[in-house]
Image (cartoon, rainbow, N blue to C red; front, side, top):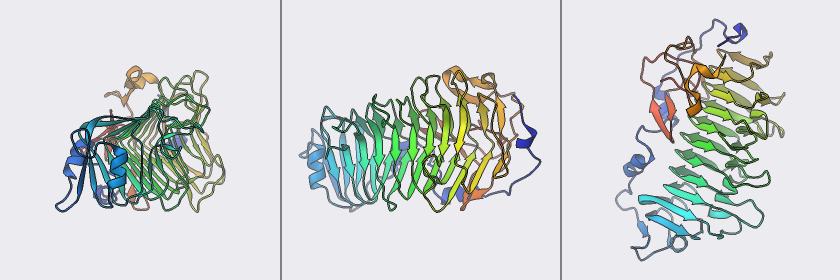
Length: 402
């Protein structure tokens, strides 16, 4: 373990109230998504449409034709081969009941775009698996978000040409909670596990992106991005960037494990502004992340556009090549280079610091951005869950406090 004094000046950031994190919606409740969905059972008077082999409405396609705005669609667990659909309704909730709902493409697609196409506002999908999306232009998605707003909770995306594709509409908002993206289907470089276009806002919490193939694990052109407490680990995949914001925007990246595989097709882990800065604000805040570079020749932790307005790198652990260029336009401190043996079990992707690490308690409060505190109050718990960090826990660099 080494520390560059330039990264670690004697400074303190203002304290922030952890309750603010709850008010701003950055925390998931501690129970996993299934318990959360039970807590969100339809309120009295909410119309419920039940779907499955034991109900009059047996297919998702039929449900999409019959559902009305404001309904809850409860789908019986099981396999739904070739049962693709377009969902234009507002305030619609699709929820798996009794287990997982597995939507298997089997060659089918909606509008030549994917398995589900959504255009409604305030839509929620819980407990669905989207598997095998293929379309003629080889850009098929498990879910294609074209308009409106969408929350995905406890969903899985496997063997698709793209896991999720979100369109280019600044009024779109997308929230991803406790979802699993990967492995991706082999393709021609457009195969991203999650690709978000130029939307208004993206929030990603407690999710797992892995085993890419030529494309990126998570690519977002959103104006505002909150990427909190996730695992982006390419493992044995061949991803390009693990995380990219090609058009800049506000990107708050906190509490994430980000790992580049030995077989990566791009030596950068994170890229910002690589296709031009197109938003009103351009800020990247990398706070309390663990970045692991397994590329044999060594990679680059961050590729950063020169005209960004603000770059803050604070409390990160960097495992790999010991290079992180400084500059007058960067707020960069309390970052530490570490070796693999600094972690409990890196071969099993357990990148928690060893209990006797001298880095325990060596982080500094990074303050807040737009009212959003950036001192972690949670940490990612595999698979696709969160663990609360108790008050009084020594504040350490990296994604894991416990």
